[in-house]
Image (cartoon, rainbow, N blue to C red; front, top):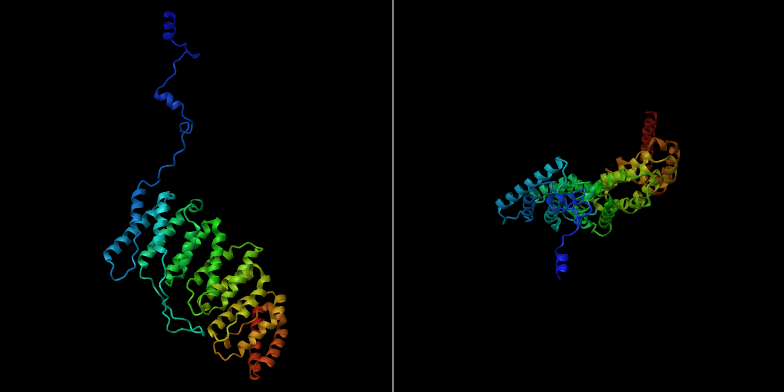
Length: 415
């Protein structure tokens, strides 16, 4: 029994190193990994780059209340909200100026506040229905949103946040629902809001490379709804801004053009010539069409045919715009292509010259020097068309205009 007790209390043999295992704080530090992480622990997220992130989030949360600027609202509360929005804008711009990414929590709070202030139902249109001739003298020159003092700062905050955030981080916050909500705001009748929205949407398109196809499809769908589903007399707000974005996108298309891009020209851009409100966005539309012709001259035939198909009958203002667009295309068209388009183009020229409208008659298109080789053929086609479709007195008018076109083409060729 004594031997057993002695065996129990006998000391443990010493380790091979002869040293006792240390349990000090220094030994625990030595057990750490080189990256500073203890075994079995996950890497912690980096600390917030903004020490005042919590106060900024509280300030952003206080801006969720939406004011309609109705007579019953208190002016002091509206001014206080605008002051808070200006403070938030200053801090967001300060972060962008220092090349410092916004905190994740700040971005989440910002986009929630932007959505609460911007995404809203549009009021009924202040524009009366447009008559068939496309001229409305009673329409207001401009419709302004009463809540613009707040909306302006909110758009500036959104633009500053998008500019200060790289595309990879922006994909974690901006989803397709948010992009669709921004696209719906182009229906606003306030031109100031549409201009700011155009800048923001285009900036998002440049940053979100993975969503570019979705954004192009969304814009095409919005334009198609205006052409085929909207009432003919309803004003189409936002088309000019959308086409301006499309023009910048088309300018960056690679050559040869993809089938998707050709379909956009044929199914979206050319049908936009048929609406009564074409005069409100024709400049941007003509630029987009001309960009396609410059990138692929083989599309000139389909473009000219599409323009002639949508030629107006009673809208003289729209007819003058289409004549100018047709003239720009004829300046860059290949002579071999023009030979195939001479009959329909000359038929339209003859009708324009013999038009009863004093606006359309002086606006007949002129031929480029590249088409001067076919001028006798053009003159012959014009005379045949005049003989069958126009009064006899118009023959002398057309001959005089053809002579002027020939002289101007000769002068351009010499220059």
